Length: 494
Image (cartoon, rainbow, N blue to C red; front, side, top):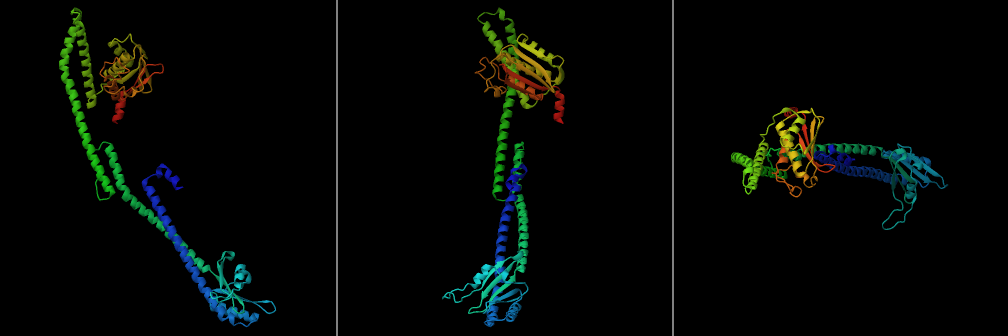
């Protein structure tokens, strides 16, 4: 039963288990001590009572019953029984003598009605059994006794015969007083056991508070440390194992705080370096871009030997410009300075504008219901769509299908390409920064930041992007954004 109770969640606390263990130990010790005490006292009380009664009975048999004539009358037997019972009140006496004519003569006296039928047959046989006298046994007859319970009441029955001829005597003593005394002792021991159990529960509670309070403080400190309060420390008192554990925790927390501070400093330094580098690159890139545009315009008039080099310079200049722009966008997300500029947007028109601006109309199929309006940042939505559709065209191949739907309070945009799909080992990493699955994307010449930036823009809207393989083949990217981003932001702030 205790195991069943402890199996439940509410019964698995260390405090309760400690209480139960203390209670079981105390109960076992108290019951054992009470049982031993009761048994010893019971034997002592009964032995003392029966020894006193049997000793007195033996003495009376020697003094009075042995003085009867060889063939006593009923009156002599009765008077002797009365004298024996009256000399030591508390037990009844029965004298039995077989006369010369074979008739039995009885004499009975005492507080209890006592007859020969009240004497157990086994006791009568033992009393009548004549023993041989030896060096170790100098008497033919001995005193025998037995405890009985006629009608549920305890009695001591004893008997013996007069050596050399004479009546047989039996004594009948009630043990009701001893039973009551032992019952009172039993109740006292039961109460003592209950008090011991209560005291053990109180001691267990005190022990639990002493032991578990530091453990609870340690658990609270670990929780606060996990929540980011790296400067939290435990107050240490004492020199026991718990104090050593608190010292170890404080040292660990101190080392962790220093490690996190160093990592944060290095991360901040790296972020600042990337931001500064991106900013510094913008000025020469602006000049390079202007020169590249001029060269591109004059490409038809250049020497055929120089034209490929000019085309390569123009292409790489644009790629470098995109990389710098992406790095600056990433640093804004890392620094937490990216902000939304919300507006009511016709989503179908926004998707069409994104496709049209990049000349993808011939390679993209749009399945969008007109009239869907969402409140979001149109520029960031354009960035998300450009990265998802551009990635599908580059790695999956056309036609790329873009579908648009509203599911409850969510705007769902799915982009599916016509390629071989994404390998299973690549799926968990498609949104990682600078990740390129070269084996599955041999034509990849991007920076590896596009999908990561798309995911960051989805997150800042309170949405998400998932990547999977479609049932009919091809990669499937699903964008989920709240229809009203402003309301979501207000709810989060509240």
